[in-house]
Length: 253
Ligand code: PGA
Image 1 (cartoon, rainbow, N blue to C red):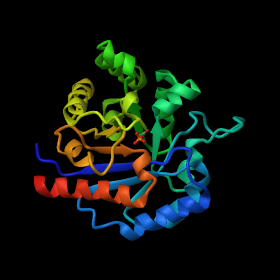
Image 2 (tube, rainbow, N blue to C red):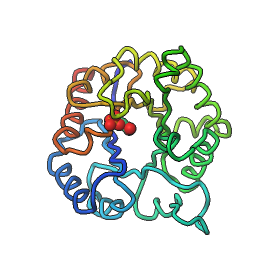
Image 3 (cartoon, rainbow, N blue to C red):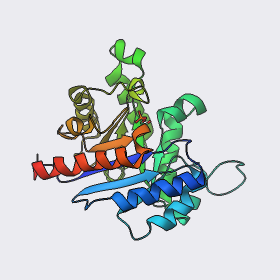
Image 4 (spheres, rainbow, N blue to C red):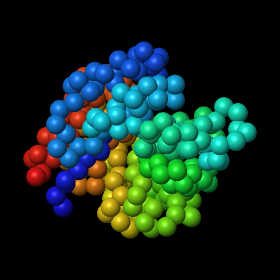
């Protein structure tokens, strides 16, 4: 099938001061070429979201938060509600990133509640799934991903599944420099595609994506873009990944 769109999302994690974030946004906006079907999203830390939202207004780059709480606004000290994110101009929210699962005890059922909360306020969820190295080595990759998807999506309507994004991020590839080979990633993306029974949901790959390996990943039939961590913190490398996406689409078109 011909590829007509690719999505490049940058996850800045718990990095950057407000000043550094503003500077990165500025550099990205200055360097952004004509996107021709590539969609670009950035997820700054909460402290920099509002400033980024103002800066991005009217541009072709969109804004994501890195997390949300599932409850409506109220007495939940330290948490941020979807309503608050939508209010400042976020359109997307990362949900179930492996670091949230690993360090903050997020379960598949919490991921499910956060997806519902995002839909409630009109935010588009980018739902992350992925296996550990031990799970891969013991041939459990498919069953782990199947469980993550089944449990988190259990109360979603099929229309909602078509409206979210999935990011496949093998945990052993995150921040390690060990990217999954394009074939390895494609195999899991195809499995996810079969699980969700729709070709409409974009499936991004994440885990050590950089300017050198991006093009090979984007050329795979079921890889619809990338969730980029480390390489999204430098304008030059993030712009270069965006450039790879533009040229893959051009070659396909
Ligand atoms: P990485 O992170 O690109 O630094 O491996 C990706 C992610 O965690 O989303």
